[in-house]
Length: 389
Image 1 (cartoon, rainbow, N blue to C red):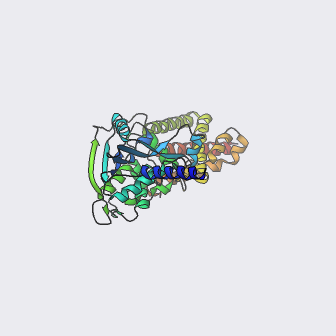
Image 2: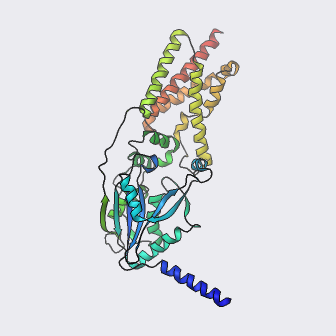
Image 3: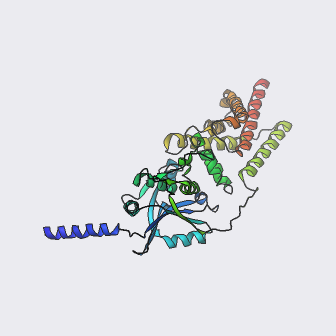
């Protein structure tokens, strides 16, 4: 029995060693997939690792961007910043065909590695796809499909890849995101609301590699520790004729501008005919307060990049209470000063809009103006009512 166990262990160990072997003609490549504006999650592009060895008949694609909509509490975990992503191995040709079918460019960068380095990376990837290792917590800018590849080189072949240290763009993380959201205006607005001033820091070359295109360009300019080009060969496998589509209708700018016009119209009508559309104010303050409540939750109870969020100046959670107090005259008379404070805060926000540490989405200025008009209207309405009484 003891000999059988030893024999089984030896066979298993030998098979494991064999499964990690590569030939001298093997190659490892970084694959960059172009952005797509069809979905928000695909707007930034994608990165993966290709391992090809014709001698062994393998052509694998290692994908760190896999997530499962069916995982328990998917949306709750997403809000908490606890969404599990995973790495999976696929047949490369199937992956290539899929992205070509979806009209996204496919670029390959063959890496300048010796056989020992290739073997180490291959072993690392094969170990990573095991069920006990494959899962990781996703982060927009610090832990995604592109940073996994960047960090893989640093961990497996430390000091070998030398990146250009000169920061040519001087963009913040948010500004880099904006480059890819030209046709995802609502997604851009959502990101700008939910993510705080943390992502307004300048992203140096190293940290800009959270975006697949920037990983591609940094690898393209990288040198090895022997001062050789890290990229041996670059192949453009597929390049679509993609055109940018811009629409002015149903964008945040258009919709929120209409909201502002409606607010101005109702405010002038109220003043002219001595009316008060309390239900409209209820919706305005309830909406802004509810957003604020979400932002407070993201700030204090998640791992997202949502701390120090200046959107809380206009999206004040206390607006929820103010919304319901609109229908309680006794309480309303006592808190009328609150609406003046809101007005002054929003006025200050507009005056300092372009000087804040956080870049606020420009379309929000219409919403802020709408809340500002309603705040000062409610204050004067209550103040005049108190004087007349």
